[in-house]
Length: 235
Image 1 (cartoon, rainbow, N blue to C red):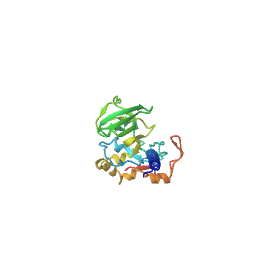
Image 2: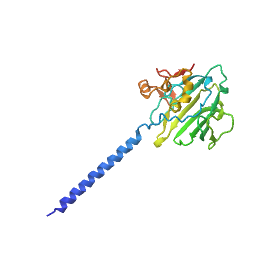
Image 3: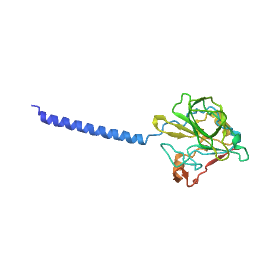
Image 4: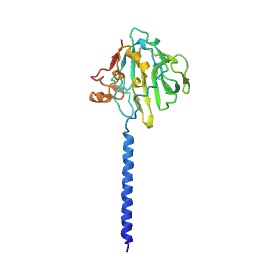
């Protein structure tokens, strides 16, 4: 004869254990969202035009350098996760032309006081943004406007600041910055090779290298530039 009381107790215990497991499974999922794995987006070569007149550039800061200020994402902080382009000092920096590196839509434009910051979403790549800083516009530009690859946007603002560019991804709702050089196709990177570069990694401090030589930050201000080489000099 079946003991229904004993059976019901076992059944209740089974459902309690299952519910307990589900709660902890959801909790683990939440932790994974807080510390998500890096998406594999480092080598999507979507840039189609040089953003600046390269012949007028003397040196370029490395990704994760200690130059400028802290520029961070959801994965790393206290490092500059963009590139600064430094024109030859004898040049009129305000004469250095800036171009749209992709065809796309202007999704944000901000007056920085020292020129305009322009954020462009490439056509068919809505989870990427190209951000160019300190542009003196040659023609009015507003959010929602379309730009052509190679279109003249204006010039660099002045010698008061470097020209800088950042590449951002919001894939899987996590904000991540990648190197401009990882977004360059071989045809465009070859222009840097003609000026002495060999590999894209020449322009990148790896996360492991930066972690081993950490910077210190007060807000966005670096207290040190670190011990690693921050610049790549061009020929």
